[in-house]
Image (cartoon, rainbow over all chains, first blue to last red; front, side, top):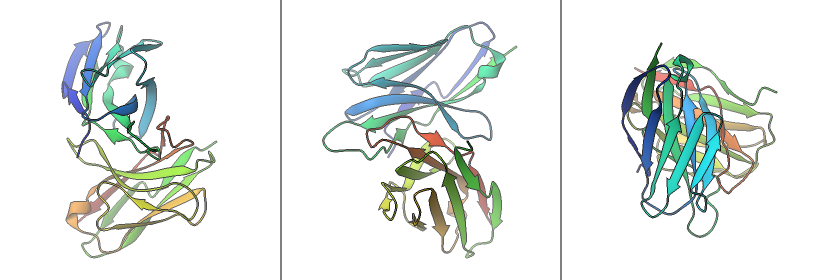
Amino acid sequence: SQQGEEDPQALSIQEGENATMNCSYKTSINNLQWYRQNSGRGLVHLILIRSNEREKHSGRLRVTLDTSKKSSSLLITASRAADTASYFCATAPGAGGTSYGKLTFGQGTILTVHP
Amino acid sequence: NAGVTQTPKFRVLKTGQSMTLLCAQDMNHEYMYWYRQDPGMGLRLIHYSVGEGTTAKGEVPDGYNVSRLKKQNFLLGLESAAPSQTSVYFCAGTPSPWGTEAFFGQGTRLTVV
C-alpha cells in the first residue's frame, strides 16, 4: 500500500512562479524525503527532513513537515523550465527497529513549467 | 564514479520467458533495493538486501527472485514473465539503514507481450 498521497497530481505554471506540492502520509516516520524524476530517468534526491524538524531549505527548495497532520509540502521558488519533472515524496518508517533504508513513495506530482 | 548502473535499459519479453536485470553499484552501499514504477502508483518495493548474501521481500515480491552474491551487484530475476510485470524497474542503494538518501539507477523499461 502507498504511504504517501500527493497533491496535486499535476501542476502547470509559468516560469518565475512558485510551485507548491503536498504530501500526506499515514504512519510515524523517521524522515521524509523529496525526489525528482525527469522523463525517462531515475530518481534524484532533493532534500531530506527529519521528524524533529519543521522546515528545511536548499537553494530554491523549501520543505515543511507537520508531523501532527502527517503532511509535508515542497515549495520551489522562481521556477524554471528546467524544473519540469515529476516530484515524489518518500517516507522512512520511524516506529521501532530499523527500516533497513526502505522508503515508501507517493504517487508523485507532475510539474510543468512553461517558458 | 558511475554510481548505480542498471542493465539492460530496455527489454521486450514474451509471456513465459525469463530474464535477469543487473544492478551494479560502485558506492560501497550495504543496502540495495529493487522497485517497480507503474503509472499513477509511484514506486513499490519488490525485494531488498541489507548486505552481501542477504535478501528480503518487499511489498510486491511475487513473480520475482533476487540474489546478492557480491556486495556491488544486486540481481532481479523473472522466472516466467507475465504481462502484469510490464513496468519500469529501478534499483537503488543507500549506505544507511535509517532512511538516508537513496541513489537510483536510470531504470529498465520492461515490456511483456
